[in-house]
Length: 503
Image (tube, rainbow, N blue to C red):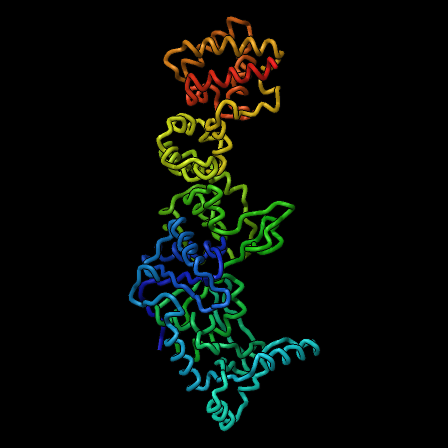
C-alpha cells in the first residue's frame, strides 16, 4: 500500500496550539506555502492539539492570525474544511485508536500497563547506573495470560510501538541524503496515551497518510525521531513522504537556537514570535521577503523581490541545511524600503492602529485628521518600523501647554543668544499672522527672506521655531509641521516658548 503516487504536491503546517507562533514555525509554514504554490499543489493547516496539558485555546486564533498576517492562506483547514476533515486532531480520536489496534494486531505495537511510579523508579535506577533513560520493554515481554488478566482487571494502559531490537533503519532527508540509525538506539515510544489520545508519533503519521501528504517540512530537531517514524510507516506498509528537515534559526549571537522564552543577547531582548514582529510595525511583505532568505536564498545579488518572484524560483533542494543567526539589521533595512514604497494613503492606513494605541486616540479621529495627511509623507523616509511613527508625530497631538521645554537650548538658534532668539520668534510670529496661503512652501519662502533681511543664517533663524513647535531635537521638517498645526496652534506654541525664554 502506498501513500502517494505522482499526484499533486500536498504539504501541511501542523502546529501544536500550546502558545504563540514562533518565527521558526512561521518560516516552516512559509516554505510549505511556497512549495505548494510553486507546484500548484495544496497547503493544508492542521491543528495537532493532543497535548491537552499545555493546550491553549487562544493560541489557535493567534496561529491563524500570524499565518494570515504574512499572507499564507491555506487550501484546507479547520476553519474552511476540506476533503479530509476534520483538521483538528482531538476530533479524530477514533481514527487513531483504530490504527493503533492495527499495529497491535500485526505485532508492531503492544499495550503497556506500567504505572507512573514504576516508570519513575526505572528512570531513577537508570540515572544511578549512568545509563540512558528510556522504557525497559517490561510489558513487551508479558505472557498472553498476564496481558489478558490485566485487561480483565481494567488496568489503564498505553500503546507502545515495538521497535525492532536488532538491525538498522535507513531514512532519507532531502537535504542530507540517507541517514542510518542502529535500532538499538531507539526506544519503544508511546503511540496512544491512557486517555485514548495519540502522541505525535502516531497521530501525525496517520494523518499524513490519510491526507495524502507528499512532503513533510519540519525543524531539524525532529531528525532524532525520523527513524521511529520510518518504522511506523513500514509497519503499516505505507510509503513515507519526502522528509525535509529545516535548519534551526539561531539567536542574534549565533550561539544558540532562537528561543520563545530566553530571549536576551548582550543585554538586549530580541523578537521571536510572529505577533511581536507584527506589533513592532514590520510590514507583511517585508517580513515575507526577509524570512524567505532565512535558510534559502533568492539571489545573492537581489535583496528585494516579490511573492510571485519567490514562488517562481523556490526549490526545496536549494535550502541550506546549516543553521544561521537572524540578521535583524537587514530586516529593519528591508522594512524601511517597503515603507518608503507605500503610497502615502496606504501608509496612513497601516499606521492608524499603531498611532491609535500609542497616542490614545481613536482610529476614526486620526483617519480624518488633516495633520497626518501633511506629516506622514515627510516622515515616510525617516522610519524603519510602523511603531516608530508616534515618536515623530506625538508633539502634534499635544496642547501648547503640554509641550516640554526641559532643555532651553532647544529654543535658541544656532550661534544666537536668548535675546536674539526671542526677537526671531516675535518676528516669525508676525509673519505667520499674515502669510497666505498658510502652506509649507509659502511659509518657507517668507522665513528665508526674513532671515536674509536680518542677516541671520537660515539654520539659526529656523531653530527656535522647531524647538517651540515640537519640543524635540529631532522632528519632521519645520514648515510642513507648521502647516499641519495650523496658524492659531502654531502661534500659541510660539507664545508659550517666548514665555519660557523670557522667564
